[in-house]
Length: 167
Ligand code: DLZ
Image 1: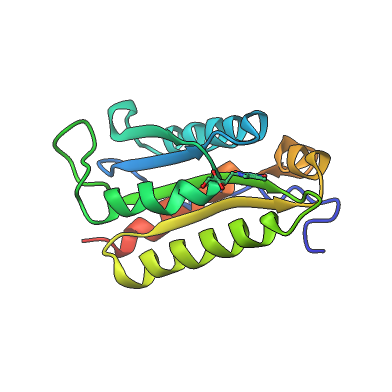
Image 2: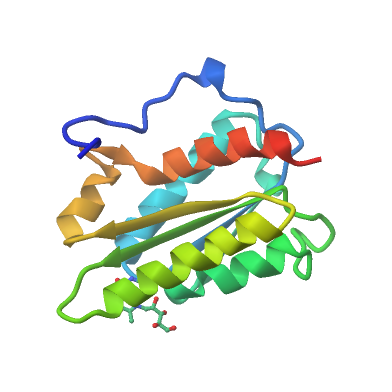
């Protein structure tokens, strides 16, 4: 795997466009909260380090990863606004699905991947796939501020790069 023994979350700030004046929504799944909250913290820190103001970041929660699509769609199509009056420039979706004994894992992963892909294809703003799909909790913790970095940081970097394409 590409992530073996390498922290992929390290980035060169000089290569990241400033997010100043841009508005971001971070939707966080409550399932595996130890993991998703750490990823959300990484995303928030990264946005702020790259020029985004506190008031321009909205963090909201949904029960599970499967529900990320619904919330992201509300912000993508403007039926929900940030702080009551601003349209989001990008939505960062954060979730963690851990393999269990049944096929539920597959349906959640496929559902959210297809749902967020459809939003990217059809909506006007980028929707970032910050979803871990792991075999166990340790693999998730390794990628949520552990030895392999923080995928929340990477999701925020991706969002900062993608908002360049938003009018
Ligand atoms: C039901 C379920 C299961 C078994 N596992 C996870 C998981 O590992 N990560 C996650 O984010 N959510 C899980 N869920 C909940 C689903 O995402 C969803 O909230 C429910 O199926 C209700 O739609």
